[in-house]
Length: 213
Ligand code: AP5
Ligand code: MG
Ligand code: ZN
Image (cartoon, rainbow, N blue to C red; front, side, top):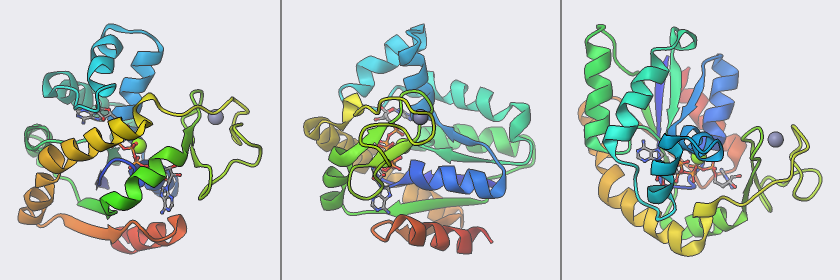
């Protein structure tokens, strides 16, 4: 099964993608996580990506598409995968589609986790993430058992650099301009599904499972 998670920054793509990956036994691939991993390890890619991410802009397609194609060519992707944060532009979607078409393959669903802009800033300001294992929390909606400590691995939680309110506004603007056109793109392909992302995390997950079967 090959699934794409669409949605604004902070809509809950990552939260849901982790649950889906767990239930269906397929890898969760987040281009944002891959970039953050590279930033943490100070790689060339990380240095380049950081200048865009800190401004709330998209990393250019030249740096993103090959990275994604290499990742989905790995052995663990044989039975499918869940993409979180890719594609984010029409050219990125076309690159993926072409690569899959060449193998007589295609994605199964593009699921849009729909959350209005008003809710987003609130979610982002409360988000905390684990720099070690990648687990995501929210200080109100999904608090760790011990304040600012990861339940899974015990590391100190951090706030993401791009979760400052000004940067969140910029990311939202970029989303509407460059990523939202993918809704029409996947509607036209007959792959588009939408869930109400303002529901509780568990209810959103049930709605997604009902689509995936
Ligand atoms: P990326 O890491 O993908 O960030 P994003 O799309 O902005 O999305 P987020 O990770 O912020 O949100 P999410 O939807 O995963 O929500 P989450 O589950 O955490 O990308 C970061 C940057 O990298 C981009 O800006 C860009 O520069 C670059 N980049 C990445 N991919 C790229 C690409 N393909 N091309 C170009 N550039 C790329 O949830 C948010 C919060 O809400 C959490 O605190 C969570 O606990 C809480 N929450 C979740 N669900 C619920 C719920 N139902 N109710 C209440 N709270 C909830
Ligand atoms: Mg995410
Ligand atoms: Zn952790």
